[in-house]
Image 1 (cartoon, rainbow, N blue to C red):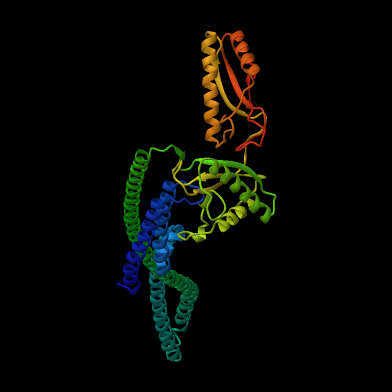
Image 2: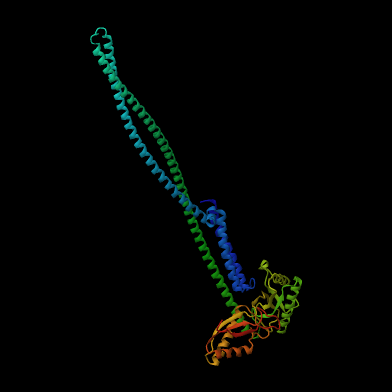
Amino acid sequence: MTFYTIFALILLPILGGFIAWAGDVIGYRLGKSRRSLLGMRPRVTARVVGIVVGVLLVLATLAVAAAGSREVSDALFNLAQLRSAQTTLGHQNDVLQEQVQTARQQADKAQTQVTELYEQSEELNTQVEETQEMLRRANSQLSSVRSQLSTARRDRDKVAAERDDLTAQRDKLKDQLTQLTDKYVKTNANLAEAEVNLQDAQQQNDKLRAKNEELHAEQTKLKQENLQLVSTNDTLRHRQEDLNRKIEKLNNSITEFDTRAADSRARMEDAEAEARALLNDLFAWQMGAAGRPLMYEPGEEIICAVLDTDQTGAQMEASIWELLHIASGIAAGRGAVIGENGMAVKVLAPIPPERLGEEVPEAEIVRDLARRIRRSPTHGFVVSVRSLRRVFEGEGGQVQVELWGTPNSRLFREGDVILSASLDGSAPRGEVFRDLLTLMTQIRRVLRERDLMPDPETGQFFTVPAEDILMVMDDLLEAGGKRKLEAVAGVDIYKLMPEHEAVSVRLRVVPRDT
């Protein structure tokens, strides 16, 4: 076991426990204090904290493993390259094996040719030996004739009477000698030709032997390279198996961490549910004990306005303070008490992310919101003042509020289709009217899902001209069948409409040819 393994086994549980403990504590405190991040609900904020803790656990595990182990880093980032290299080496190994097989076939063929040449050489040697034997016999005969000729010459003076016979015999012997000489010359020529053929055969044999040695050397080299490739392939396969085992261990660790994170989230949700139950019981007890009418519910909006993002930082802060003073006047009119800040409301949220867990002054909260509004890409920004807790009339004290903001983005352009539906004009007039009322409800639901804010005075989300309703009913009844009906935006619709401008929706029946 390496030092890194021991270090990782000690560090990872400590780091995971610390992050899980920190996430649990932060989520518990956020849920208990009902604080929110970035305008989210407290419950969603606690869940986001749990998710962030889970992500930090996984990232910390992977970062420590990748930083301390080259194999883990390769498994995470270079596994595809290792597999590609293994595939390439396998293909190269197959090609080399085919080349070795071809070289072996060529070597066998060359060995066969060498054997044939050896056989031819032996036949030539046999012929040469036969020719040499004939030459020895001819030389023996020539020696015998020469001996006889010498004897005849010595006896020539003694045997004068026999000279004619000896001369005739000599001529005859000369003829035989000439024949033997011609035969000897031919035999020497055949022997020379046989020696030349033997030399050629020996040279060809030497060439074949050299080529065979080269093929054998190349075969030995290919065998060595093949063994090296097989060894490399085995090494890569072992490394891949080790990486697969380490990846499996990491997956098991990740699964275990996910299980722990899920348990932590479940405990946080149980704690939040218990806290909400206690708060509901407390509020119910307060209402039952006090018997006073309710002034504000948690999250209830006191005032809402659209601020222009083109203002300077000082102008934006001044606009927010003006909105707070108006909210203070509304709250004071309902019985809230003016506090040390000169207002009946006190801003406690949203707290800047870098100051979480601290008590932040109202001016800093306003300054941070002004900066976020000025960074918005839209022209307008919706800012509302909302109550942070339940407040009863006659309770005394200030109303604790939060500043809630969102870009005043355009939801629909003038003429955009908000909703389309098919209505039956063959039904009775009353049923057609009920279908139109159902369509109005569907339009309201679509606009609410797109975060449209109702009119602060009337509470209505939109208006439809009465002549549109009558004209659509007449068109449907006249058509006498199912027709497509569209609800389109009569004006540009924003999340919060400008003052004195309501959301207008127009109705129209789509012609059949479209």
